[in-house]
Length: 247
Image 1 (cartoon, helix red, strand yellow):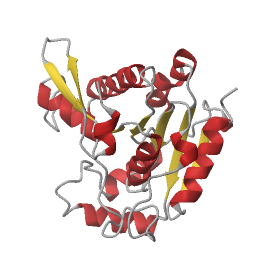
Image 2 (tube, rainbow, N blue to C red):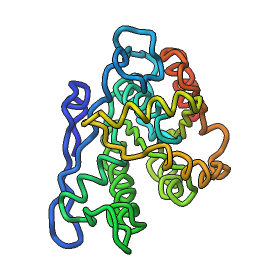
Image 3 (spheres, rainbow, N blue to C red):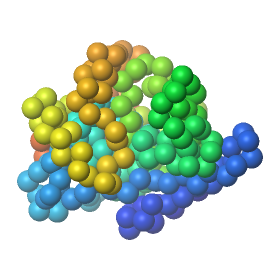
Image 4 (cartoon, rainbow, N blue to C red):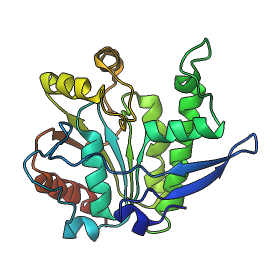
């Protein structure tokens, strides 16, 4: 199980998962993205250092938060800061998929008729492992922030019953950015060896066409954030949305 202390120290905690074939996958929480001083993906480019403290978020009941949006929108940067402020793990679907592939739980190749690493079966296994994370973390008193595109309803649905099951607040945070900025960020990623996403401009356009509005998620459980919004303002809006769900 993940340790929240390790997450706050920037050390990716681990959890062991036994796969159907008997292999043991070591599943990591994701380390925070690079500092906003040198990272074009920053959603709040002004502060010299990321501000991750917020008293209201620290006091919130353990919550499940899905970061939703297109590649290079800034959702990963924001999600890692939200997780730190909430005191819980931050998990990226791209990192989790790679961990499962390394363990042999899903195919590791990127092509072929079966779709390999990006097949429907591989994606289902990845997202099921994240559902399992929520069932482990939230009852243990830790919020969980999951960073993925969540652009299609079928990939959001496995998480929608968890708030009632676990008795926790839930928020779908949609992050958007101007497309000129997105292109700059995608170009910068090409030379970043630590970037887990393989999305480029072509993938961005394809995902944009496939995206489905999250009409199945109540408006009170959705929040839209524009890249460039000051971090503290976003923290306060997230706190408002989470607190409103607590009786």
